[in-house]
Image (cartoon, rainbow, N blue to C red; front, side, top):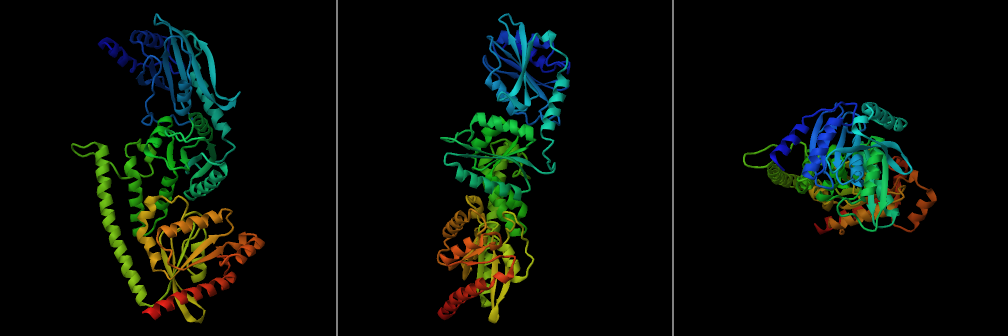
Length: 539
């Protein structure tokens, strides 16, 4: 472009229009003339005061609106920005224009159709509506000459904001909580995806996030870029607008490029199942060891994702930043994370040694060890509390217990054992977490008996058993005696429980009812003493 044309573009960026107009006739004429000269589309983003925020230079067919995360929202459901751009060659508003309107929550998308002479023909505009009409979630305003447009833009936007607010008025929402839409994409039958989604809902609620809506899409193949179809993503964005969502949570793990692609289409925060679990663990870890393990897992998750937009990682990037001489911020971040990982690795090795010494001291006391294992929220901590009359934190949430806890238990006939509670397992447990918790889970190798607690009231208990058994096998614990205990029989069908017990070697309890413990205690004592006496004979 010529110097004079660049200067005219710079002047456009300093212009201001009457806030009650979409664009003034004078600025529309300047945009048309300049667009015809350079044979490119020109776009302006204007705030509600009429001030130009951004000038966009496109090609002959389209403009690309930059990321708007640096521009604060006007405080309502819509972004507080309108886009006005030129079209050459008589082209109407395009699907890309509509997608930008939707994905960016723009107040309005307007287009000036420019004649070959450079004069503006008419102004075309479209805005979102809360309730779809004929399957469409937007409304086209009647085309007008820029000089004859009604001076009611702010009135129109205020009415739209009110409509969006009223559409959600019946749904009470806690403003202090994140408000999420949960998304799952599958190429298999929806049944399995629904089961996984049900568990994701439990995870999200365990993280004190409000679930607004769940969406499952079945596709012949996963979109490698967006994971979900672009049209479906557009529907989700409109739902997010109407429900006032601020977070999208995907059930599938997203790779860095997928997160980047999705966040290029939306201003909402985007996380996946792995990041959600990491967040839950970070909130729940109480011990020094647990916090170190979680930090290591978070940093390993974060490292390959540093190139993406910062706000997509707002839950994990706290404290990492800064700029060093001769280094970009990205290089500084990577170097600091690698340095921190090295320090964490050393500290966790020390923790592993300390645990080894504690186990050795415990062995010298000649006490057998029983370790409780199981799927998350199976009732391990509740059972330990009831058995040992303790007050360990237990709640009906996934991963309520992270830090390992040990208590003494006295069987009848003065037989004393140590019972340890461990972190619960879950399907698709992130590798970063499994590796980080290696020192904690190594305690299981010292157990004389593993008691596998199973929530028999959960419709997915068989799948949960399979997950726990796979994790135990991965931890190389197949050589330790495992005893299955069906828990929560107070919530299950007694006939169903009876049939299960008849064709298995398990026992059944209700962790909140000590009157049900006798069969469990008798069998546990028998198994642990058999193993313990074997050790003593060898010794």
